[in-house]
Length: 286
Length: 248
Image (cartoon, rainbow over all chains, first blue to last red; front, side, top):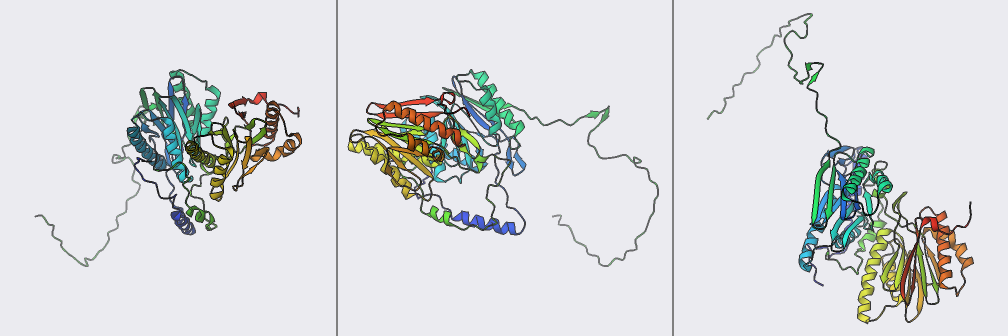
């Protein structure tokens, strides 16, 4: 069977030698009282739903590194093919690289078959890759798209299991978003209602989960058209510093006039210093 | 498709070394965010579950609940655990969702290929053997309990069970999954050989309802499938339509 792919994964499974080394390193670092740097995670709220004409995918835009926000406006909806997009939660590097690898392979496959790619194909490729790595690739994905068989939506977990459902949420804010979906989802919604529902679900994740925040990105996929709305909603605009308070300008200028601080006493103490050594260094002015 | 033969589970034997490694006692797990991130980042998706299959004269009845959990969160409340392997062969999956999906995909491929080579419908025993070979070979790495049921022209309706560890045996009635422990008594006392299709359906639905009532990892809807010479008929019994046993 001829196979066409970007990366050749023929040799066996994952090599676990590095895991043993990492564990020993971690132990050594902990002995010194320090902690190793945390991987950048996307914390995240991502979701998707199937509506009358296609699928709507939504995501927040916060990337965290431990308890610090590493990126206030990162893009979590990744391109897989012209009709298939994928939201990613979990380790940022893993979701980015996994989706890029599958996107390349899917394009080669599509050229090889001479047909536009199907969502089920992308799903198979992703689940087989993630299963091969036994959960060590921390990528939890919401895959959605429209192909010749209609709109499809899958949720893919890091260990390689997938579920095909009409609405899914993933990420640390998934419980908040799922609560909104379970309350208001109906089959065959109109586009505006579907976009509003996804926006509200992501907003629930943003405002109730510490790992999610910033803006809401949306991606509406229909047969023949993709609307990538980034940002769809800037729910957390940064505040603007006040120019004047009670008529006095608050410019942040820290040069103060002479006499602003009154002088109470003044004492002058001359320091008697001896010249010990004198050296002259000429400047190179050529 | 990815340079990967779908018929083979790509698990190297070196993985066996990883599981037998002694990690130092003070090593924290590499992804150690507990309260901030939900269970699915640490735990694997498991099908918790109650699954069941019964033979009758002319076919088999297979049933399962519909709950998939990651820790305490229900990842999918309408899962279909009755996976088609061939036209008249289904399998019920319990254990790790990723493992059972991967195994089922691999066996579906192998059985389809085998059936084309033979140019006839495969035997249910063949499907069960394929599951057994995979589950036994990779028994250290996998967590999968599978019940295979189907109809073939040579031996009629058959149920084979392949529990964790990779044993295979044929049974007239088989239950599996975490919820099965609660219904062994009900199954042993209510099964009689020679039941009709309708009696088997009622028996299966009743057993699954009782298990779902008591087991936290089982719930949702009851999915039933009847496999016979005519093909596969599927039904869903929703939560409010489940048989009731007591008002307590």
